[in-house]
Structures are given as structure tokens and as C-alpha cells.
Length: 263
Image (cartoon, rainbow, N blue to C red; front, top):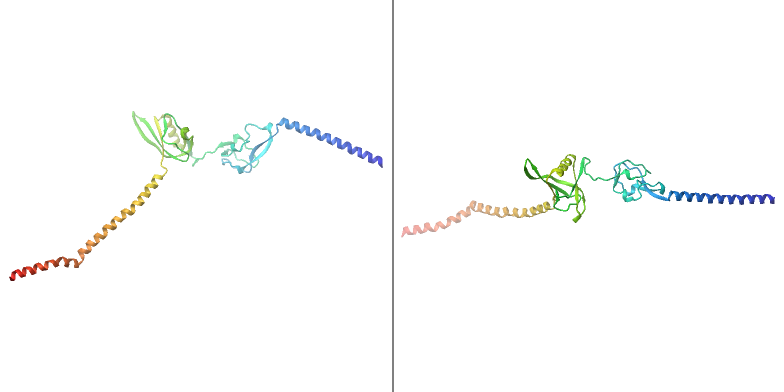
């Protein structure tokens, strides 16, 4: 009985020693693999189904770890590289997002419109600093059959973006139809001079309307002052009492004549 217990204890001790050695060997192997892989790094994947051409936001993203060894330049490790971009392909939940899937978001009002960049050069001049969402007029100077002329080429054109501010203002991007885009590029290439004017945003119109509203009551009071005069004049002409009053001074004259005749 004691011999059996002694053997069992020896076997348990040997098993424990072998398990410890095996665990140590496995741990060393894992450390070696991790050293070769370079550790783990977080990349971004989609948090759900995302249609193509959808502006990507933070709530649509999640993180996943991959070995550093398998990280490439196409993987996205910074969230700021994704925000404000769109994916050119539809994404499903868990799909890894790479740089070649992303394109800059184009804030066009119409899918048939195009963005045309106008940068400040010796031939293109801006009268004022222009910001995004402003509207501009484009004036061109051209020569036709030996005659030079300056004309309004495009009016009230929407500005999609502006590059630079202050002294570093470089130019703008305007949103035009595909047909007008061709015409505008032609003018950029062959017009002698292009001048970009910042269009009115409507403040002056509001002021003028308020001035008109203020002037209207003043004009409306003029007829009110003249009409009573005409009515009084008509009343005095139609009033029989007024006529009798005018005829009364003639009575003393007749009396005077009769008294002269009697004398």
C-alpha cells in the first residue's frame, strides 16, 4: 500500500516537472515569435456595413490588432487619416480599411457639377480674400478679331473651397456644370486677363429694403395732408351758406344806390 502511494507521488512529481518544462519552452517560443513579429499594432476596421461614397465618421470605425511584421503602408493606424474621407468600395462589418480605399470627400451640390481651381497668377487676380461658400463673379478680358473687350464671363458662381488666408491666400475652387467647366478652363488658358470679384451676399439688399420700408410711411402721409384740403375746398364751393356769405356784402351797395336816388 505504501509502495503504491510512493509510486503515485513520484509520477505526480515527474508530471509536474515535465509540465513546467513544457510551459517554459512554449513561453520562450511565444516570446521568440513575438520578437520576430515585432509586437502588435492597432489598425482600423469598419464597425458595420458602410455604403460606397459615404462620408466616414468615428462611430463607423473600430480597432483591430495585427502583428507589426504584417503592417504595411496601406494600413490606417491614425483615425484622422479616415475622418472626412469616403470609401470607394462598400464595406462590411470587420472589413479592414486601407489607404487605397479612401478618397477625399467632394462637397459638390450636384453630381453633374465639377470643381475647377482658380489660383492667383499674373493673369488671374482676386480683388478680395474669398472663403468657402462665398459666391464670385468672373470677369475676363479677351481679344476678338483684333478688338479687345472686357466682359462678365460667369456670374454668381459658388465657391467650394479656398486655399490659404491673408497674405498666403492662393486661390479658390469653384463649382460649375461640366459644360461651363470646359469654358472656364478654356478662358484660363487663352484669356488675356481674368479677374475674380466677390459677389454680394445680400446684406446691401436687406439694407435697401429697410430704407424703402422707412420711406414708404413718409410718402403715404403726403396724400393725407393734401386730400383734406381738396375736400374742404369742395365743401366750401358746394356749401350754400358760403355763397350767401359772399353775396351779403352786396346788400349795402344796393341800399346806398337807392338812398342816392332818393336824394
